[in-house]
Length: 315
Image (cartoon, rainbow, N blue to C red; front, side):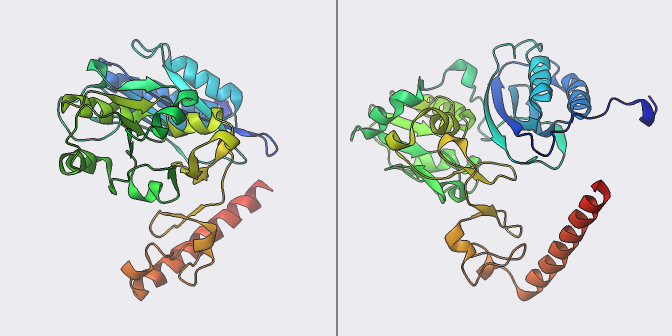
C-alpha cells in the first residue's frame, strides 16, 4: 500500500492521557512465531508503542496509546488460542512513555534460566491485594521481594527480604544460599506486575516449599486498590518506561532515570554533586571514567538537539 494511503496512526492528543496497559499470560502457544507480524502491524496501525514478548510459554509486555488503540490491541491478543483469559493492569501517563513499538520472539517471556519450571504446572497461592497486609504482617511469614536491587532501592514492602539480585537469573541461586531451611514456613513473594512471581513461586514449590503465596497482580494492583492510609508499601515502584516509577493510586512519582546507568534516581540523589543530567548519578559516578562522562555529555547534547528539532517540526 502506498504511504499516502496508509491508515494514520492514532496518537493521543496533547491534553489526552495516555493509557498504559501491562499484561502477561502463560499459555502453550503453538507456532508463536507466526503471531509476531500481525501483532506488530496492528500496533503500528493503532499508534501503540511499547514492548511485547512472545514465546512458546505465552506473552508479556507493556504498551501505551489511546483508549481506542489499546482496546483494539488487547481484543486482538484475546483472539489468540490460549490467550482468551488475558488480564491486564492499566495506569496512565501525561505523555507517551515509549519511543517505539517492539514485538519480539523470546525463549521465555520472563527469563529465569531454569529448565522445566512451568507456571502452568503449579504456582503459589494467589493473594488478593486486600488480603496482602494480613499475610505479610504475620511474624511467621517470610516476605521476599523477587525484583532486582535497583528496583528494590526505591521502594518495597515493610519488612521484605531483598535478595540483592542484579537479574532474575540470579534468583534461583539466591534461594539455594538463603538458608530457608523450614520448608513449611509461609513464604509471601511479590514483584511489579506478578509475572516474575509466577516463575519464582513455581520454582519454590519445585524445591519442596509447602506454603508459598504471591501477590495477585503484583505491586501495581496493590497500589491501585489499597488506600494509601492502609498501605504497607514504602517508596515508589519502578516501572520499565519513561515514567520511571509510580506510587499510590499509580500516580507518577518523582524519580528520574540516569541515562548513563539506567538506575532510578530519587530527588535526594538528584541534588547530589555526583548527579549530572544524562551523564552520571551517585549509582554510577565511581564506576565511570572522565572519558566516559565526556562521551555521555556529547550524547546527551545530541539527544537534546534531536528532541528540539522534532518539536520544531511538529510546531
